[in-house]
Length: 259
Ligand SMILES: NS(=O)(=O)c1ccc(C(=O)O)c(S(=O)(=O)NCCc2ccccc2)c1
Ligand SMILES: [Zn+2]
Image (cartoon, rainbow, N blue to C red; front, side, top):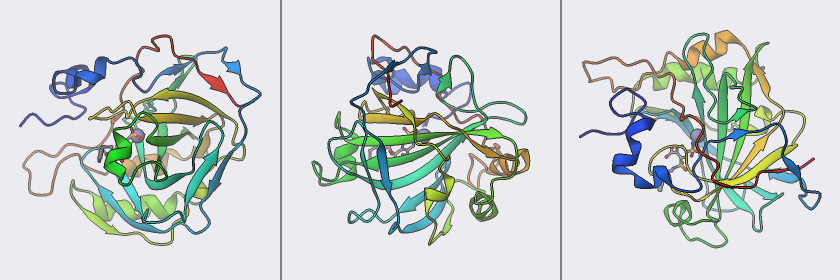
């Protein structure tokens, strides 16, 4: 059927036909304006990833995803705007085409080359990820902007594995990767209540966007574009690029800044 995607016929502008919440009141991504209210009550976010266990890296036809074992609290984020610890489930990326930007959130109207999302779920309140993903306080996604510059010394482990997951539906073992190596030096952040940026677009995400981008090289970003939206058996070969949803209306929401 007409599965959702990022093309002309199935892209963000028509998602509302199958997912009416696309026109909802807390959709993501958004543009982060110049002036954001600083909330002194917002404490630091804490990422406890030291015992995290990555399982595999896969191509789900929309992005490249690294999945984690989230059967216990071995890798959690807590603090900041969060009332509970949230368990790391997966991380993935959004990016543009050659020489074009591909972040989802924008800052004062400016896009970055790419955006990394670390997806966490509230396993204190919800038994299953699927339940959390549909609950207003179910998910916490940390967003990290990628800008082009020097090679990122640790991103190689991910880009080197991409030739193994070129096609939709492919996966390969990817153990022992700790995403702490992808964090910028500062954990200062913006936070607001939003949604998944892909269908089903559930309004279940507390977004925590790090202000400081990380640098990756054009060469490393180019390896993302070797991935395909399409499966190995499909006649069509569609290069995986521009897999980002554009900013959505703020609809009166408050964005807070950590400091
Ligand atoms: N850009 S984003 O952080 O909003 C996001 C993008 C893709 C996915 C995904 O499904 O892989 C996810 S997910 O891993 O949170 N899954 C959401 C879809 C889903 C809902 C309910 C049950 C299973 C999957 C999040
Ligand atoms: Zn995402």
